[in-house]
Amino acid sequence: MRIAVIGSGYVGLVAGACFADLGHQVTLVDNDEQKLAALQAGHLPIHEKFLPELISRHHGNNLTFSGDLAAAVRGSAAVFIAVGTPPTEDGEADLSFVESVARSVSGAIENYTVVVEKSTVPVYTSEWVRKIILRNGCSAQVFDVASNPEFLREGSAVTDFLYPDRIVVGADQDRCAAVLRQIYAPLTDGSYYRRSDIVPQPERAQIPPPLIVTSTKSAELIKHASNAFLALKISFINAVASICESVGADVQQVRQGIGSDARIGQRFLNPGIGYGGSCFPKDLLAFRSVAREHGYDFRLLDEVIRINEEQRKNFLRKVRSALWTLRGKRLGVLGLAFKGGTDDIRESPAILLIQALLQEGCEIVAYDPAAMERSREVLGAQVTLAGNAYEAARAADALLILTEWEEFAALDLNRLYNQLKYPIVIDGRNLYAPETMAAHGFTYYSVGRLPALPEPLADSVAARKLNP
Ligand SMILES: NC(=O)c1ccc[n+]([C@@H]2O[C@H](COP(=O)([O-])OP(=O)(O)OC[C@H]3O[C@@H](n4cnc5c(N)ncnc54)[C@H](O)[C@@H]3O)[C@@H](O)[C@H]2O)c1
Image (cartoon, rainbow, N blue to C red; front, side, top):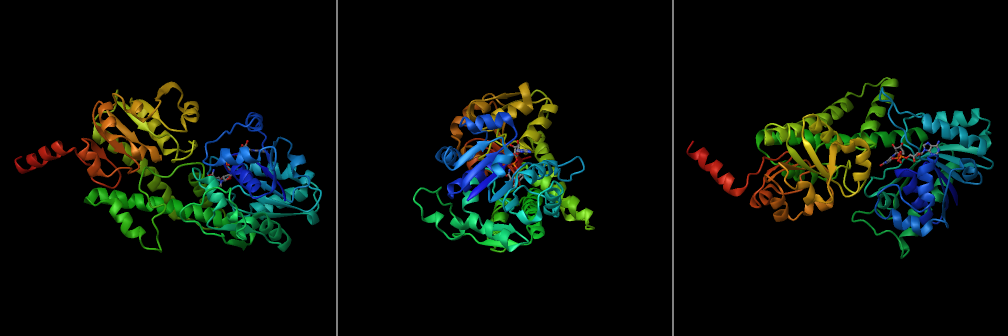
């Protein structure tokens, strides 16, 4: 089928490449000339596993990049809108990019086309998109608006797209649902998974995935409610982590105990420095705002947001309590991206913490496997960027772990010990067992667990307790 995807960011690019891999003819559109030129020249503007392989497989065949929205829309069975929906100052979703695309799409539709909201939008947006398309002269006979929310996670976006837990299609007309069913048929009929050249199957894949057809309003709500619930899980375990710290319990054990209940599950129950990224913070604000607009005061979300902000402050307090004064302290920082596996630093808790530590007068030497270039744009020359994790740790008063990259969980601890001025590690992602760190000579702080002291130090503390 011919498909146009408008917006070639994290979602549009991944969706476009995956649709091409399913056998569709895809045109990816963007109005950012620099990004477009890079894509046309074969350079990927984002870091995402398996994306380079898919793009190089299909670029020039099933996949083309274009700045000409009208040409891409003409003759396409479906047009996916995947532009940004950032928050306004009041926390509402700024839908001006969506509106602008809807306007341009209107003039280009010739034959029956489904206009699909792929961007995360508040309930009722589909009605507005429909109105805008009609208002700009397109006949109601030749288009429908559907909602097909995207649940991919950065860092595993391609795998998430091709092995989804479910595909949600919000469609109020059968003809429109039929087009979306056909687009996803290679996944839902299982034919994609029988091919030999596919992206490897992850551990917990639901094959074939279910396709759930709902009303457009329900689909819009499903996306906001899903993100709000996931953020709630994170804030919940972070609140539990704070209690663990106060009473001397171990949040990892508590997590295992509660997460083993199939009704709860382990996923998104990782204590840390709070959620970030381009979705959860803005989607929670937008959901709260649209709920309020329709008469429901969603105070539960206020609390989720409050706990998340508090979690970063808790971590700062931990750094202070580990180092006493902060001015002039040199800190090695591992991680800038908002999560492992991506170069995205939008609303990254790591960046927010670094900015707070800079304000306190710390000197920061940071390393991230993928997000350094983007961070440089935000942090400027205030932060020194290191070539690897050990370089970041060199001569530092302490090492902070702020992003859960796999490589940060597999450091050579002896080498790390020799780099640091003082063997102090403050881990905001619980990547290590406290006993292991103590056995390697570190004073180790993490989230929801008691600090671990290096064995000789722990012995002397114990001795002091016995003979004060
Ligand atoms: N990033 C995620 O993990 C994720 C996951 C699920 C859903 N979403 C949602 O998907 C949407 C897009 O997110 P993203 O992270 O891909 O954003 P992004 O900022 O990475 O990409 C948006 C792209 O749209 C382009 N664009 C803007 N206006 C345009 C126009 N008029 N014509 C053509 N191109 C235009 C921009 O240049 C940019 O490249 C958002 O609503 C987001 O909430 C994001």
